[in-house]
Length: 202
Image (cartoon, rainbow, N blue to C red; front, side, top):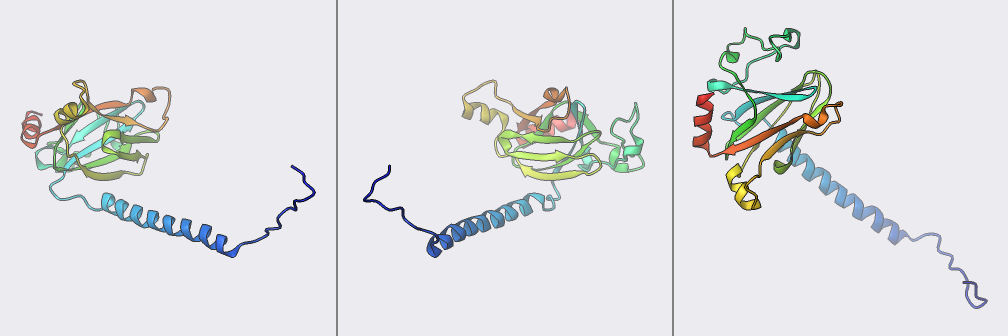
């Protein structure tokens, strides 16, 4: 409010303040970038040799899953081989393809590295497993991958959450069309010996 006894303060510049609000964000952002780069480098590094290989392919509007079979190696594919019978475009000249198998839902072992090989058949999709903090885009024509280790079984999470209905889930986080909401799969984490039983049955 106007007062005859008060004059406006002329305060055009303060070097100390400029150094502080330039220096502090620069230090914080440098730390964030370096720590983020180190985390990303670990995630995107070569997966351990004993990793369970699972290929996830997104299409409008579902995910399909292919496991590496007993040799634990997902066979090669070629998009030009995709037709009404071979929805994956599996290249059967690659012997690794012979024992691959499909699954309705993702089943993985606790405590063992899992290598997800991700691709899309039509438009951009995104693999998202929220409870495991996993997210990676599925890009047409550009296969992506990452590896991780699940450290809690589904049964352990049911107890921890106090929810007997709890399930891990895989969802799509790209708005990929009208049926986007239906791109959901159940993810089950088992003890290693139970997982091996399940895999053998497949």
